[in-house]
Structures are given as C-alpha cells and as structure tokens.
Length: 173
Image (cartoon, rainbow, N blue to C red):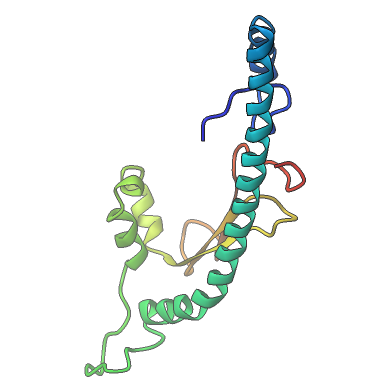
C-alpha cells in the first residue's frame, strides 16, 4: 500500500523524512491538512492489519514446517542412501551424490555465488533444514547446514540465523 509519511504513521522509520513531510503538511491549507490527518489514521489501520497478517502468516509457516518435517526427513534419508525408495529394484546404489551441490547450482541466484572452492566443501553437505524463528526471538528464520566429516572444518552442523530487516516488534503495527 502507499503510505504518506507522517509523524504518527507506524510504517515510517526515518525521522528525517518525517520532519520534511510534517513541514510540507503544515504548508497546506487547513482543509487539506485535515484530510491528510484522516488519511494518516486510515494508514495506521492498514498498518495494523498488515502487521496482524504478517504475524498470522508466520504462524501458518510454523504450522506447515511441522507438517513438512517428516517429508524432509524422508528426503534426507533417500538422498543419503540411508533409505531406498519403496519401489526400488536395484540392490546397490541408493542416495544421490552431491545432491545439495546440484540443487544449489540449479538455482540461478545461489549458483552465481558458488566458487570452485565452495564446490569442494559443498560436496560434504548432507542436508539443509530451515525453521521460522519464534515470535519472541523476532522475525526471521534459521538455516542449518549438515555436513559429513570433511577436511575443511570440524563442525558437522553450521547454523545461520537471519533477522528480517525493518521488522518491528509485535507490539508495534
């Protein structure tokens, strides 16, 4: 939605912009100022609804993360070769070598950032999991990278937490 930046608007984040806009609004005729104030009130209501939508969306994401978890665990077992497909006929094999490296290289956004040095390390990647952060922690998500033993680092699990820029506490719409 389009928001005028007034001092009361919960969607505004830059105080310099607020000062500039307030000066502009004060230069308007009284009737126009009243209309702008009414529009600002409507904007606050829209922002509150958008905040509630984002909160409910994150709750929905968490719900589906729980439902998807067993499917992703099954995927991990198939990729690693720990399990074979139910209809597997081959007695040997199983698993998908370099699955995650291939998946990343098939995503243009990620592939553009993978170097030859990364490829060697990413061959040790066995799984990637994600989890939406709890509301009390903030708005964002956590990626967890699982590795088999390798010569590059000793940790088998590396975690990266992403906090969404510009996210406001829940008490603020």
